[in-house]
Length: 92
Image 1: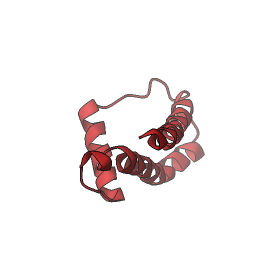
Image 2 (image 1 turned 180 degrees about the horizontal axis):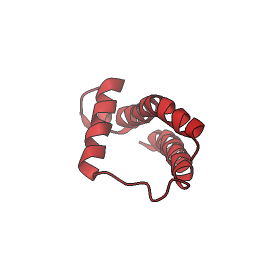
Image 3 (image 1 turned 90 degrees about the vertical axis):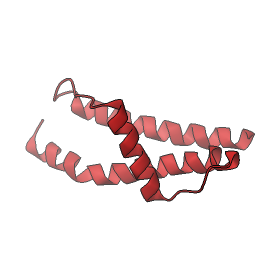
């Protein structure tokens, strides 16, 4: 992996943490608030995501060449979770 790509990945990490927290927050609002759980903000969502990541354990990147593919997969997985949550919340 080139130095430029490493810098881009490092600088984009806070953005993707906030995007992931937003997706977590939207799914929380759609599915857990109707069950009586309290409303949370984006910082609560980021903290919960961090806690869940910590509890799941560190997942090592298998190879440096594969890191970009895993990063793209993570982005697509998050978008998939948002779209599916958006569709499913209409059926509740």
